[in-house]
Picture (cartoon, rainbow over the protein chains, first blue to last red):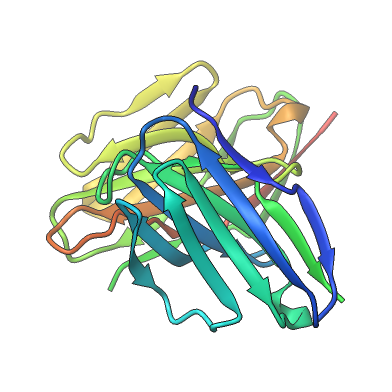
Length: 113
Length: 117
């Protein structure tokens, strides 16, 4: 199983809503990543988790709150988002931080209205 | 500073033509990895190749080939006899491996390839 599964695939939310994105992998990887990709732009790193601990937060606003409840699961909790937060959110995993073969999920396409 | 430049924003070719996607990178590290990813309209990033900085041997995989030249800091990607299914955005990326590296990828801006029948 070399899959990273992200749910939902599409999400439309209002600016006052609270929602969560989910990412799951069963490859035994201990590093997981959230990237944000705006239309026609490359992915940009948001967060890195290593052994379930947050190791990098790339100055992401607090309306994005990551969580890694176990080694297979990575969540991104969303609250009070702005329309400019609309993007494709990609999750990736590697065996461990510094290992370079990253596996990406299909992404969640988020629209904030 | 680390940087990946893909100067070609969009390329359009007719099926069966060969096409080369350019990638130029900047890094201060002597040890690093270079990647190419394909992103079809469905959104997922599909891994195509990884190259480490010590291996300049060119690689061929079916219709795909890669030319890594450290002297010019380039890692170009050629698709031979392109097909409509090759239409996608292609990203070149860099990952450093030195102390403190978190293994995250630094992407170029991508090249959108359209292959017309």
